[in-house]
Length: 431
Image (cartoon, rainbow, N blue to C red; front, side, top):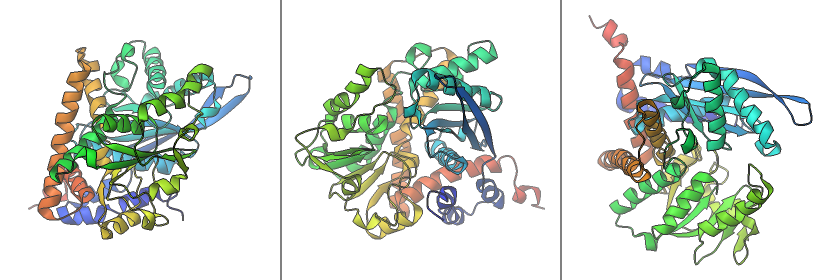
């Protein structure tokens, strides 16, 4: 069986060691084995040519012990039930590791969104909400953007939910346009948060930004904002890649004009998704995505999709550290190989939590009607994320374990406490 098909099993294979270290109740082990529920729907869309297409969609809700579920919606041709279940599992851990009062959820539609017109994309987005209206809500499950979804799509979805409810429900979805109740700072939050985690780790080692080289796999929203902010902070971005290839410049790259150039054609043609590539850049070295993963850099940033580093290519990794912005970019077996090679991994459940932290802040603003400035949002983000990251780093160093184990321990401890608060076998049979 391929690693893609066994994504949830691969993710859960890390848990037995965590459970044993914490000596958790069997109740917790049982509840972690599978999502609380997975909803599937067929979403019909009338295409511009009058034909009808039906797209499969899912919403997985893993656990609600700590609060309502939270998680994005992705549009991608490879989406399936196993993937959304696994992503909801990671979201559960992520929310707990940074101490947010949420459980984990995820949604997706199996579709190539780049083949859709704007009107078709809107119909699909609204159709997703109609299909799952009964199982989401501001106190039950709050969606957000993910791969190939953005604030415009979130705006359509929030509007559709309000139309069905017959009243405005801004807290139903986060990552919306600011004019519809979206939070300042949300678009850049995942990339900004990842940089904050990297900087907190680097400070502990006395590493200076100007002496560090970085390669970024995945030049989408999160990868772009990370690269842009890292460049502004003095780091040298030497390589970037997207789905079509990679570019490299030993002296360093400036992400901002590359991003603008990449999206210029999209804007001129009124397209929803960018069809251009970083490969269109001149005066740089062009390479394959595999070559980028093998570059000798201080930090390799994985900001594309899951399973970027597997047992097939882990031996080629020469970076001193890996920063996971994507969800699950390193398989469990590859993780063990990286540990043997003494490659530091800053794990996804911590490093990419900036987005859900600012989504939490958006949810609060929507519920209270009190909206905050971007500078205040960024300050709250740093306080929350860096504080929780430092706890993970302290634990890893104090117990001589890697950062992923430390993050999982911090997360599972909190979820287990919530589960135990409702009573476990130890409580009911303690006589």
